[in-house]
Length: 312
Image 1 (spheres, rainbow, N blue to C red):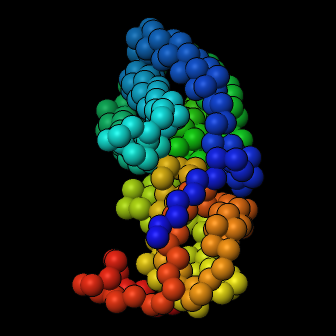
Image 2 (cartoon, rainbow, N blue to C red):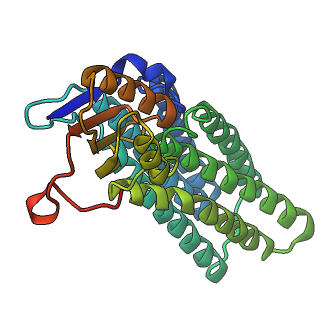
């Protein structure tokens, strides 16, 4: 018989931020400030004859889109499950995180293309306006990244928004530093070199986000959960002689599910055992949604069994 448990009552014990963590104000501030900044950059770019500012305005507009995407996913994840979407809409956070990771690398490619274009076709610009707007960008993007700092360790969807803002802040730092060095030295080649170095740092630093979101999309066990350790822990439960068909996968960027068959010959107090199992899985491994089937003896495997045969 299958026994299903969902750890709603213990959500406050999650290692990351709570599942109902309210990032709405952070998203609202981030989107509002960046929209104002995009308008300012576009106007400044036209006035200062700076294609760099215009392209950066386009890039920042894509960041507004990614913030809206992440926010929409967090709101969608809170909707109740339906007869068709039996797990609810929590998976939207994984899809949004994956799309945002891809958008981040597209943005890096766009900036690199713009740098190459400026090397090939240099044009005089109003350096004071460019550095001034870039300095404003450091403040706005730095503040927005700071708003997401709390959740970025526990939620890959929030981390995607955090890295987008951090990337923009670092690019703006590069613009200011490069502009100042070019102003004082006259070495025009410094600006693209500094920009390329920053892009390389961001690209390498963001690779982990892309890799993790792809893994979550493929329903791999979350990186912070050791499946072998979970299997050993289950085998050590009272009366359990074997574990098979153990599956651990992410329901969202915060919620993890587990299904398993436990062979427990002549097991007594099955309900009490399962209740304690649910509690301990949440506190030991942050697995909030578990479905466990208790069996008296090892069943037939393979074509006559349940799923994949796994070594106990």
